[in-house]
Amino acid sequence: MLNTSDILETINMIRQENLDIRTITMGISLFDCVSEDTGRLCQNIYDKITRTARRLVPVGEEIEKQYGIPIVNKRVSVTPISLIGGNISPEGYLKVAHTLDRAAGAIGINFIGGFSALVHKGFTVSAENLISVIPEALSETKLVCSSVNVATTRSGINMDAISRMGEIIKRAAYLSRDSGSIACAKLVVFANVPEDNPFMAGAFHGLGEPEVAINVGVSGPGVIASAVRRAGDCDLSRVAEVIKRTAFKITRVGQLVAAEAAARLGVSFGIVDLSLAPTPAIGDSVAHILEEIGLESCGAHGTTAALAMLNDAVKKGGVMASSHVGGLSGAFIPVSEDAGMIAAVERGSLSIEKLEAMTAVCSVGLDMIAIPGDTDPAIICGIIADEISIGVVNSKTTAVRIIPAYGKMVGESVSFGGLLGSAPVMPVNKWSPARFISRGGRIPAPIQSLKN
Image 1 (tube, one colour):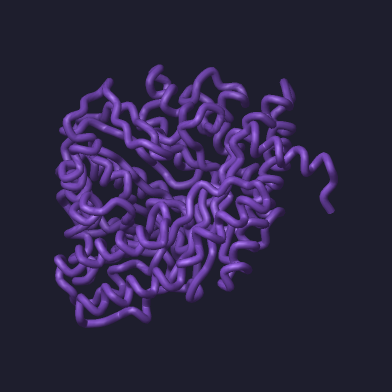
Image 2 (cartoon, helix red, strand yellow):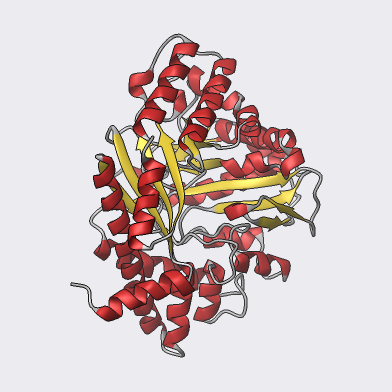
């Protein structure tokens, strides 16, 4: 039962501490859209999305108005397109990407995810055809997002796929060079990709999902930072307890919105994603939480330990608040989207290597990192391989969303606008892994994958 203090505290979280629902994402199955004719396939996809999600934005706005809870994004995720495209040509997949963009525009959503392929054990013809046009698809559309899963703990790491993605990322950067290489900001390379993720650019509607589902992602770094600040100079056990209790309250807001949206739309309630999703706004930063815990600057020695505690406490609080938790669930550390991370890079305390270490204990991975535009594709592949291996060995989701900003050098920055923010161009280790990458094949699954 809610009391007056709980209500007032939630109002303060929204008004003063940047609490919001980062996204309501409707997942839609497209398996019934399959057709051997590309034109018919595109029409089926357009009709299914616009029919199923036509009320998503209005319902989101109704909930915002009724409860006073900001809902920043309304989005759609669909079945990985490589699974429904069959034997259509690369040009056909590009037409599908434009169809997704048109459908997203027609219903007024912010992004649509699912121009995706699952290649952790190898390429199908359809996956290869889709991947080959990812750069064109993302540079020619505004709202389409793409993801490629290149590894799982059970299957190991597809190094051929990683090698391919290094080339794809470089070409996407070039084709969108006039807009800060923004196509790369809409592309994620995954290990152990979740099937119910509401966050872009990695969202798609998985094979085991219902026909339609509502998944919600909540943002609350500013709320957590304020709670830690109010706790003062207590010991770390107390800090973890404060974070856990605050995460519970944040997640209850997400649970309310998810259940209400699903009921009004007449679809399944999927999950609440517990991830702390930062924004470029001052006071809404995961890095600032770590600094409130006691670090002089994010990236200092101790950062990984503080982040591990934060991530664990958020999950413990969140799972008590919702019966259906999923997606990525933890703390995001996207550089361009987090004002504290940007500042830490600019002051020299945060490097790609330190970010990589941090990803061993938090959600996702190396996210929204800008590097020099002339970075060799083999080095990009090496960065991806390192990050993916952390996910595979630790049986967790990891990912890479990296932007080789065309024409930019270390010390410059690239701006994407909106929630994508702006990223300082970070230096990379220039020693080449090219011979390692060129071996290809698959890195075998780790021994802990043999659990049956």
